[in-house]
Image 1 (cartoon, helix red, strand yellow):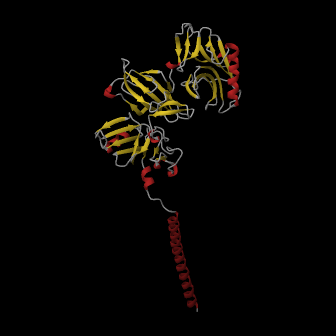
Image 2: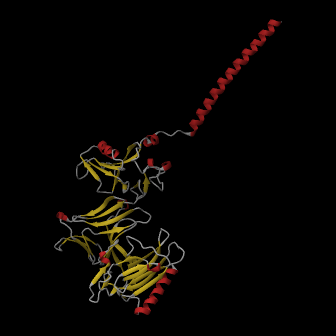
Image 3: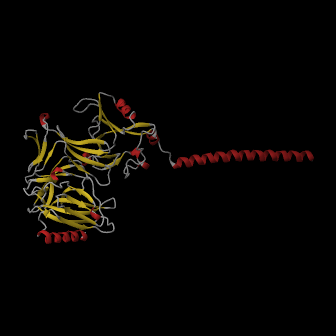
Length: 468
């Protein structure tokens, strides 16, 4: 970590010589370089803070960063921080990898660029020829390129990542995206005409796990984060709904967590000196889409158990819950459905059939080789409909009260259930059977040998008597 502060200090010194302080704007023709280690150092972060918003702590700061990634490379990016929280990153969707040096340059023609060795451009704003005069950070945290008349030519607010700041507006069809580490799945917070929702995305698959709808089926045009909550507006700029904060302090940002996929509203607590959540969309661990690994069940104790028949060695706490389970059922493998009572799924927007039996629901999944699980509702809920939901992803599975009328069925290779349900044979039984079989063989062989010996003996005695 010493390297982080060293590189940050060096870049601040460079700015002091060029513009007088680290909190000044960056003007056209300005260039800042950040050195990158020649060899890869896991966990390395080199960061140079270039500007701040001249506010009371916690304030907004702009940094040029070089960071070691899981791919064994260094990413080069421009970042905005609120206190110690990263609220925007130029490489959020597509990282730029560089070696030796990470360079930020606002060119003479007004294009902001990130470069690597030999001036290779890895990211740019595309504002060349638009009269850009400087780069600056506003009090809202919006990073902007402006001309001599202070007209905005480019702004970070138009490129949201996983955070929405106070005063920021997001229109319909906009989304926040969060990427969990070491996972092929990702989360999105999406704004639609009739609702806002959280989604789990895996490849081409997409399932919602939380949603909020305005009353009376009113349509949404845009959202704005205010001091007291997330406000929803219609096309007449009239507020139609709000997700309110339950704390007095003003909100600072909304964030989509990359570990949990939960949505939270955050404020700054002067007492703790930290950002704290004043609202979370999901308050239970088991309501999170990836609380457990695939083929895991989140229990009432918020612990994870694996579906027993699908784990190697019947280990309920196996680290890899889908170990031993085929990932492709479209290869002609014979399959059947394993029913789990008292289990449901938090994932919504699955293919749905109504007024069908449980057997039909199971058959629908069996007939689709891409279907991995099915959730059947017997109609005890508020809808009073028999419903069948078909999934191509076994995730978000949680334990529910028995008698809820819900039955979760997982596709498994045919015969695996019978082989696991058969009573196991104890070793002592095998030993006893082996001993008995051995004794029987010994007795039979011994009896035969005794019979032959006795018969031969009688023959010899008879021959002796005749000779006499």
